[in-house]
Image (cartoon, rainbow, N blue to C red; front, side):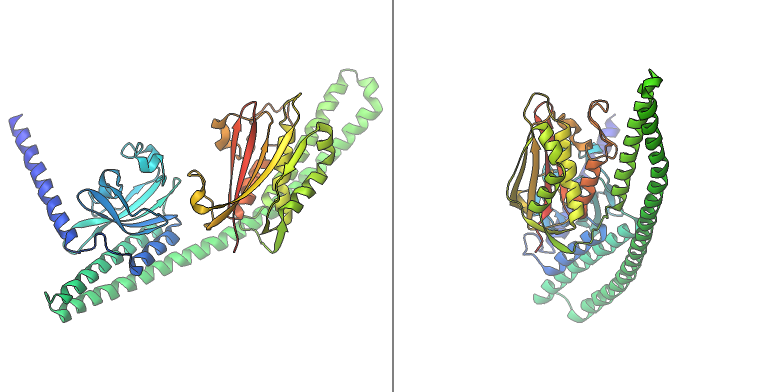
Length: 461
């Protein structure tokens, strides 16, 4: 036991000495609390583009904090070291630290940076190891949802991290040259040769990554086209026997209902099932035609879209006695058919899921909001300085808020299918359309009180 205690004390002293050397090395670069520099910002921007993440950082770790030399997609300049993912990354200088979902990692599950802003869920960090072998910090990318990087993306991230180290050493070299501490010609020549080779390697790797991304996009386009063609022919082939089932069951019911006795109930169920199947096939076809990247070619008035939808739903609105109120809505660049599908589904849902003996009220509200004012949980797929917020709110039967995350899943229905008709595809169509325009749609509900669907769309310049 005494020997074990001595060994631990020796290891602790060795670790502390190593950390002291690392901090001394970091301070020798005179980089902490320096002003932003375009060379570093260009690398973090490039990392976010390659890895498709909203945040990329050059993070340097001193005794008490992690300080960001460059922070693409994040407004703060640093955090306490105890909260830092990068402080863990530098413990293994030869490895890329990847955290797919921080909420499931016991090291970070309770971290305020995970549970609150900026919602660090995915993290990948390459230690910034200088020529003396000291891990000064980490070059990392961050996302707000679980994610995995390809081998090519990880390779590109490591190359960009090497470029950060080269910039740090060039910066240090310039500072030393200014004070006359070393020979200009020898060190500069060596560093330029190293940087030239690194740039050549970087260009080769990035070109290969770009080639594979282009090919993947082409394959995806071909796959989507094949899927759309399949959906069209499948729906046509399915609709033909359905039409015959509907026609013959209607004919039998009209001509022989009085002779069928209890059998009339079964014919009625066949007719109902065929109608539902026909509706399901049509909705699946509509979903397959919604492009992930819609061809936006005209300025559409959302006021006109809502009025068109209400005209189509006029009979249902009159029968239910619903009152629909709408704020003045903006014009956006979009495809009018898709927007009509969105508002048709949302308003129809409100009319379906109404409370009996309670006058139905539907409100369509609008306001314009800045990016910095978005709720923490809202992450549109396209970045913009401002967003349109359109809310469709009702006083219907609502739903439990813990079900809000699943309402947009395909075929997901929260209420008894025997009481309210539907296919569970409408909200999936809404989400696909809004995401295609760079926005996001969310749901908020309270059982017995109503529901609100919030659409965030980027304001086009």
